[in-house]
Every structure is written in structure tokens, then in C-alpha cells.
Length: 227
Image (cartoon, rainbow, N blue to C red; front, side, top):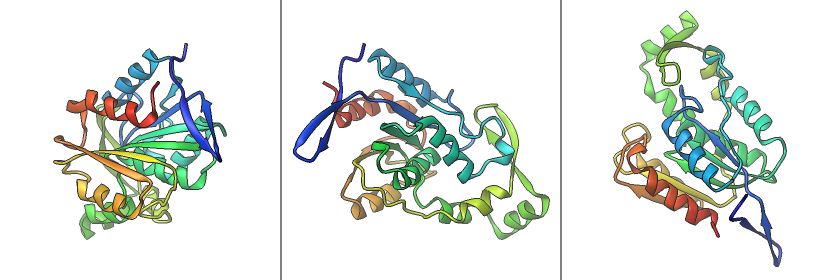
């Protein structure tokens, strides 16, 4: 039984609405990640529906941003949701929120990989890019399968069509580690300066944020207005 409800502003009225969470895992991860399982458990205790789709659909080698957005669309199914996303999942949540403003009510983003297309380009040397394009795939460690798995070059080509900073307008809470070596916290600081609908809370942690899970939950609960 749902013991709390989310209140959404609609003109002059305040409409209590049952909440559903869609959680998006990070790059080369899975719905079995530590954070996904933690939030599934906490929301489950509250009786709140929680969905964490497998964004690569079990085929990491053929992964694209466009394909992941289609998986998200199937998971949302045209219904109002609160969207959570970690790292690349945070970037995907932002992209989806821009394109589906009537569906995404609020966002909770954990170390979101804003500026993903540009920062991804900067991640590799010209020689690495040439090798990836020539050979057609490049191995990456997949945290879900605990082994190296090839990723096709189509991931690069497809990703280049998407914006660095998705300018969604929904209320958003960004939770970021101040010592994040993967997506520096400055990326989120820059984002909130340009987007007043987003608020940033920093934690003394790294990219995974798994050592501050209870703090993430406390901030998430306050933002979503648990009653």
C-alpha cells in the first residue's frame, strides 16, 4: 500500500498523484547494480512501483543512445513517471525528459554524464578512435557480466547527433560526488548555473556514490515530497 504521494502543481490546484519510478543504470552496467538494487529496495518498502530496464537489452555490442531511448520509452509506456538515472543513465534521463515533457514529472540524477558526446570524444586518443573505427568494435569491461565485452563503433556515430546539455524544464535534483574522477562535479555545477529548475547536492564521494547511499535516499525522499 502506498503510504505517500507526490504532489504536482497544475495551475492553481495541487493534484496528488501516485508515483512510479523508472531508474536508468549507467554505461556498461545493469539493473543489478548496487544503486539500482538499493533504490529498488527502498522504494519497495514504501510500496512505490519501481522499474529498472536493461538498457542494452542483453546486446551490449550493438548499444546506441537511440536504442536506449527506445527501451526507456517502452518502460515509461506513456505514463507519468519520476525518472532516476546514474552517470550515462542520468544523461539519458535528461534527453528523454526534453523529448517527453508530459511524461517525466521530476528527475533525480546521480553523477549525470552531461556533455557526454563531447567528453566521450575527449576520452580516447586519435589512435584509439582510428583503431575502433577500423576494427569495428572496442572491448569495455561490463560491470553486469563482470567481463570485457566488445562495443561496436555505431555507439560513437549514433551518439554524435545528441546535444551535450539537454535543456529539460522539469524540476531536478542532482546528486554528485565532490571527488568524482569520471564526471567531475564541475560539470553538474555548470549545468545548475544555467538551469534554475535543477538543484545540486554534493557528497564527499566518488563517481559510484555507493558509500553515501543513505544520504542519497534522504535527499531523494525530501525532493520527491514523501508524506
